[in-house]
Image (cartoon, rainbow, N blue to C red; front, side, top):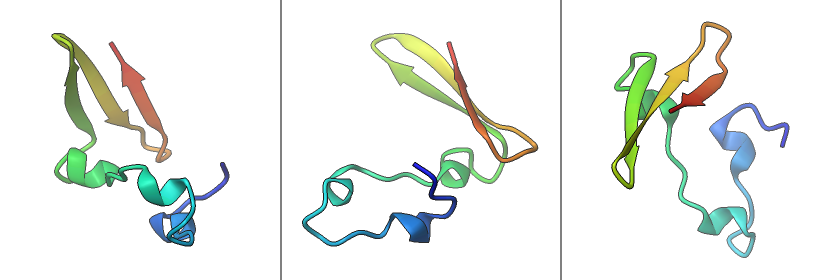
Length: 58
């Protein structure tokens, strides 16, 4: 997918994308550059790089 902005994801209501939850990464990090995500007792780190890329590590 080549979309760069949330507005680029706006699709008709019948599309598959409209049924997938969307979360703003800056909201997840509360304006910072890191957030912890827990799944089945495992902790993952979500990081926003200086280049604006997302990295998810265990």
